[in-house]
Image (tube, rainbow, N blue to C red; front, top):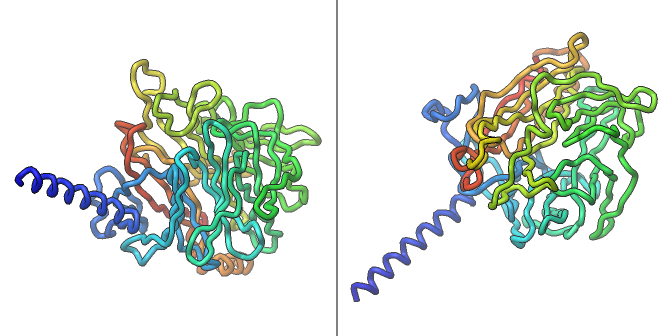
Length: 412
């Protein structure tokens, strides 16, 4: 009888743990701003927030209007699931709905885009299955995720062309993909794609710089160039790990500017180990890269990129891990090319993804910019949402994550 009671006690304890874990997924708590100084691992900037530890490993983060409303929803990507949350005040983030898939498919990039032009964004998840590109597209119908297309044998990317300056033509996002590479570098050949029923139809080829090792890229909007498939300026993370701006002169791309620090490319390749958390490139390395993002606002041009510190990258016999990460914002300068406008403090751990949330009053911001009413412009707040895996001592065994929010000072 004692053994039976002991077994029942153990079983009840197990159920408590299980229910606790499920509860963690349904609600994410935000630290009270009054007590935010108690968090020793982070030096949080004023007017920003940080969540308590989330019992799930996050590989992607995005903000959305998947209900056709304002951008107060957050999408979090796990390896085998995606979850849609709503921010309730400043206390917690509550789950709206989620979607899980077979463990053979591993999601590693997350995007939002209005594919059917109904004013509500769909969810684009780029992933791989057994080393082969395999992606899917989801849509919210009646508060639940519905599959629009799956088993897409391509690595997908949503390329943004939005120019937030007033009196400019705002160009749409386009869905792009490549079929030969999954979690290695994303450089080409790259084609535009359209959703045709439940399948993907290939469109025009996007022409990028040739004969250069590109690990990732972003396209700088150009309102004088209507051909978005032949961009005049691109941001690249090259094979030597530097951030570069290339401009098209006649038929060739030439370097306009290059960073003095290493940000991407081979800097973001680390030796693969047995657990393979991010997928394996052809040369046996894991790429932990995220593409840079471009913002054009208030007649200024910004490039946001990610930097990682890998202190044990080349130490034999040690599992590689990421000590710190930071987000850096470059601003275009007429004399110096690009200068640092803002950077976060060193974030303890691995920043797996970041998303830029535009102000709800963006139209007022643009109108104020047109009328040069600076008192309204300063109310325009861009939020930088960052997903962090904080356990740097065991990078490949990490079992939790955090969300951080920063205010981007783009109106100064």
